Image (cartoon, rainbow, N blue to C red; front, top):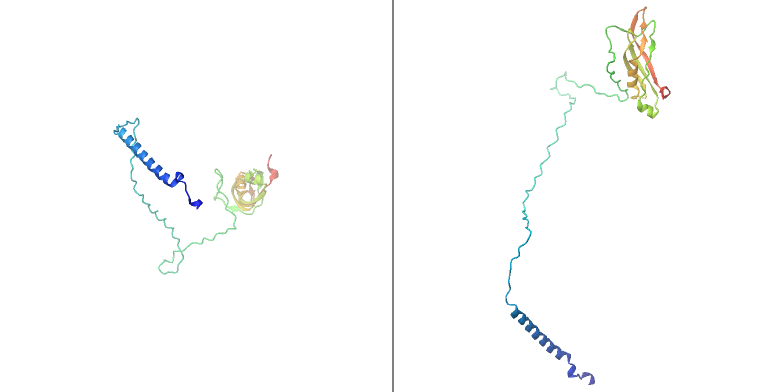
Length: 218
């Protein structure tokens, strides 16, 4: 029974209701007084010191992707056929390529003597040509740096005055390095012409030219 007794002086539930009512009445009174005190409001326009920039939105049309032009047609290659509509005199030339064949010699340098066809070329003689002037070939720079040596065998034509008219490479080892230098030097060689029955003749003969690193001047 003692636990159920409450002191009316400390009844919090009853007092909280009274405090809430008093607070509501005080709040309404303050709001009413504030509204009655400031009944008029003055509205004024404010001028800005800077100007605003107008932004225009422009609609960009959608781009159209153009199609690429078609590639050009490949050239047509004639193919052998057994059709009777094609004339018999129309043939296709053989295009067999020998990959093992040595490359053709380069053209003679400007100013080189051209072959003369006004006199025959002899392959035999009574007195052989004798070398009286030899020009040392220029050693290719790429071969010098790589330390490569070699030789070139040529078939040359010596005219009645002892000049070298033509120089064709027959063999070169290694191929594709010394040929041009050999031909350029050989066309400057001078011989005592060959003779047949005490008469100077034009002859064709072989000549070897060696390329050695020992012959290079320091």
